[in-house]
Amino acid sequence: MADAMFGALWRAFVVAVVVGGAVSCAGTPDPSDSDAALIARGRDIFFNETFNGNGRTCATCHRAEDNFGLSTAFIATLPQSDPLFVAETNPALAKGFEAPKQMRGAGLILENLDGFEDLANKFVLRGVPHTLALKTSVTSRDGPRTGWGGDGAPGDGALRGFSLGAVIQHFPKTLARVPGEDFRLPTDEELDALEAFMLSVGRQADLKLPLALTDPVAARGQTLFMDDRVGRCNICHFNAGANVNPATFGGVAGNLNFNTGMVNLPDLPGAIIGDPVPPPDDGFRIPGDGTFNTPPLVEAADTGPFFHNNAVATIEAAVAAYNSPAFNNSPAGQIIRQTTGSGIALDGSQVQAIASFLRVINALENIRQSEDYLTGKGTAATGPADALRLSAAETGDAIEVLNGARLHPAAVTDLERAKRLVERSAPTENDVRSALAGLRDARGKMLAGPPAAPISGQ
Image (cartoon, rainbow, N blue to C red):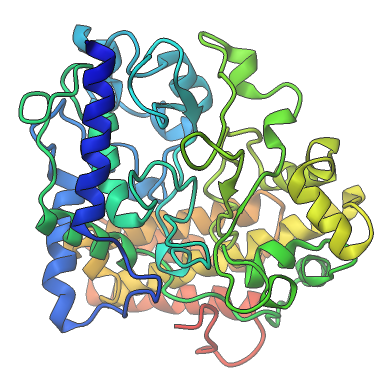
């Protein structure tokens, strides 16, 4: 009886999403006065709406101050009373809702992507993907994408349905998951608003590589990244984004799914931690086909751990993973081999160079976002009250990303000055102007060309 109820409930949710509609494959226009109210409504829902559930909101796992994702370092700062830990504080959710040791130790969240019929055995453990730059990654020749796993959204896998799937999965008061009792379903208006908000966060366009980078190691890394016979990264991460290279895949292929074999890496953190050992994850669709969406790389360096199973913690380790037998023997690795004639075999210095490139473009994006917060461009997605706090967080991320490989020490000094100014208890208008000047000075040291040179196509 219970199994049949769960199956019928899930099928009803799928129908609700399909009837409700989905994001267009053609993309979404930039936020304007006409949709600012919808974005603001979505922002309020994202950060504050619990849907009469267990106390969680969308922002419980997608933290603005943690790049709209969730890392173990951030989890460690949270009090026990935080709704993230409801499996530890609510007896009705103590078993089968989360895996607390995996969450705290590896940042892995329990998902029942193939249905709720067998909670003890039918689940996967995945990291929390950031929700930045979704506008750049929701289009694909195979239908709409959410920009990451895709199967968290019931129905057609589109972004609009992802919010519905998240409420069902993560918000219930009990594991019965009865709508109207354990949570309430989002309305069509709320789904529209959440979609508009999520599409407004982060970059609204991809980079246009190559960039005139001033650091020679990062510049070399960019060359290797774009070289179809060496790094080959640009084949699946065109312009360091989430979309594939049209020269390789034809037409406007957009965001595609690949089986990269990262489940076959040895000594995965989740397996080492155990309790429980993560079961096999079959990837996209029901049943899964073993594939996962290509994520964007511009935001990668400060949004680790990496891959759907949080396999590695640093951007250097993520680049190096593509040298592994796990990748080179995978279906995606075979596509690379067939396209280019060989697998990927980067030496240590090449791994470091590509990672340095990714660190620099990440820091440049941090600077752009920080400037947007200080000039009001980012308030549609975050709210003006959070602008100074998030500007400081983005600037701090840029500092951390660059310091992680000892890149651009002079630019880091400029960034530290800018961060101190916006972190004052009562920053003045002159403080904000000086902070903006510091951000511009830092970017000028990292990127050759005029100060206003675009780095994100915006």
